[in-house]
Length: 228
Image 1 (tube, rainbow, N blue to C red):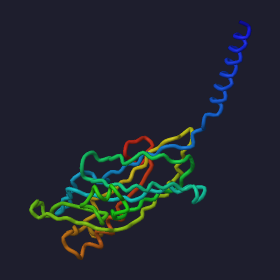
Image 2 (image 1 turned 120 degrees about the vertical axis):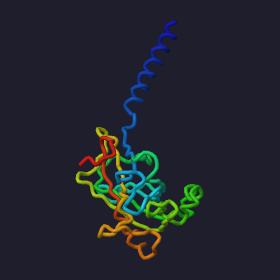
Image 3 (image 1 turned 180 degrees about the vertical axis):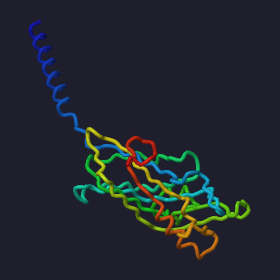
Image 4 (image 1 turned 180 degrees about the horizontal axis):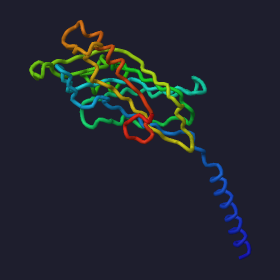
């Protein structure tokens, strides 16, 4: 009987040691999460200028990068291409929630690029966007019979330096980033005149407008608006 009691005491003691060791060696969190969303920065979904109505506007964003305040070796890249129609459904579209190492990030950068075969399933599942980065459909003069399809294979990088570094740590493990795209200005020149996308001479101005239409901001309260 004494041997049994002794064995039970030893087992209880070992169990206590193992439980406490397990608790004391639980890993400390080292990652937070950033929810990335995109929205049409224009006031309406199907945006109409005086002569141009946009009914579909798809863009390909190939990469999102967060640049560390402490050095290039701590930068974080999200390299999965995504596609969004900016004039369908809700104005704010969640793209992805990504796990990002704890740290301080001073800047974010997005890259617009064409879909190519290296993009795998995304390329195969989007045949109308293969080898292009922008697809816009609509019509002019308020007449749906005067339809247009505008495509472009532009490559562009957009950078946003945060007023205050974006910090992820144990006390603040998550935040939200919004990419806002103002499609209302895509087909307007700097004099406020409409640019007919069917006219080839307007292409370079339209592409410049598209590149300039992106804004990126932190949205801690998740309302789709800039916190500043």
